[in-house]
Amino acid sequence: MSSPSRSLYTRLVSDVLFPLHERLKGHRSPELLRHLEATQWWSRDQLEAYRIARLRQLLMRVAETVPYYRELFRELGFRAAALREMGDLAALPLSDKAILRTSFDDFIAADAPKLVERRTTGSTGQPLRFLVSRDRLSFDIAAKWRGIRWWGVDIGDPEVVVWGSPIELTVQDRFKTIRDRLLRSYLLPIIDISPEKLDHYLVTIRSLRPPMLFGYPSAIAQLAWRARARGVRLDDLGTRAIFVTSEFLQPPWRQAITEAFGCPVVTEYGARDAGHLARECPAGGLHITAEYLAIEILDEQGRPVPPGQCGEVVVTNFESQSFPFIRYRTGDLAALDDRQCPCGRSLPLIANVSGRTNDCLVATDGRLVHDSALNYVIRALQGVNAYKIVQETLTDVHVMIVPGPGLVDDVADRIVPRYRQLLGAEVNVRVETVPDIPREPSGKFRHVVTRVPRPVPMASGSGAARP
Image (cartoon, rainbow, N blue to C red; front, side, top):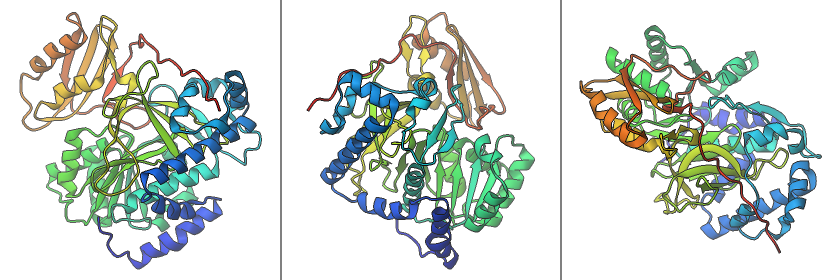
């Protein structure tokens, strides 16, 4: 996408004010942005060699300074300096939230600089406290900065943030409010919304005429539907891109947002703990931030799956030397895409980011049923604005549907038989139309939830890399 000329104020923010802000915080994001804008055009071989070197550097560092990995490598006979390819990572066991909680102190590097504490929202029932370095934060910021520039917008352009996480909302102190005003970033809290609040937000958006919006797709879709119902135009504001994250982007949401704003809806894939994982480009590729992390897609036994096949996303963050995330189970489901993106960037692609491993439902015979099989049944129906599937018990599934124009009367007759085929003939499937679906305490929208324990846990890796 061609980049329009930046306004004088946008250039002031992007070239002066924001870099100064980052320097005062001890961040290197402007320097790293320049680096990432070069590396995205490297050849695949050059990028892969760079990644292997960075991975080796990470493992050698944690072997010396992080008690947990120093002991683990000793037990395995693992020699970090012997690593020659990304596949050598498979010699190490997986890590997860439970391990980080129980071994928290042993994950801190002995020579770690001053670290910043972060927490996940716990929308899966497993909140996590963890630590990050300023270098790690700098990479996160630089990767996001690069991604928005792909779409012809920049830091300093007016931005509306439609967000609901209590983590951000509770830390919005006076300094951050002043900073956001200088950066022209405007927060619209979205946890509890009413028609009156939506109307107020629509007035705000029209007055700001933002080149970009960022936030939860479910919440931005609510704005789009409200605008359509009230006859409020949003496609004349000059908005160039809507960046959405934290939720699976349901097709009705994408359609509503695109039609209302008249611009692309752009997927960002990230996690507070694992990092900024991927960003969609104008050619449609969801590019992994490969310069500072490795992504593996594994099946339930911890084995890699071929490109195009869904599995659990496991992340190694190269910038986590001070508090390592190595072969870290995110709980997300996705697939690798081995195509070359038409945009020309060598950054590898990820696809079908479609939920979480704990969103798989459990059939009465113990099988795990991927949420995509259940989703397709509902997405084949016309007139569904949103939905949520909750497996309360092994034999009780509750389907909530927010109806839109054209929803058929026999929606339950179309859903129940297929769900019983997938989950078991004795399963009670309750289909209910509702005016709205409540959000998680984090403000996020989860469209599939199961409260039934999974019968088969994922196994850890084993073995060791040898010289």
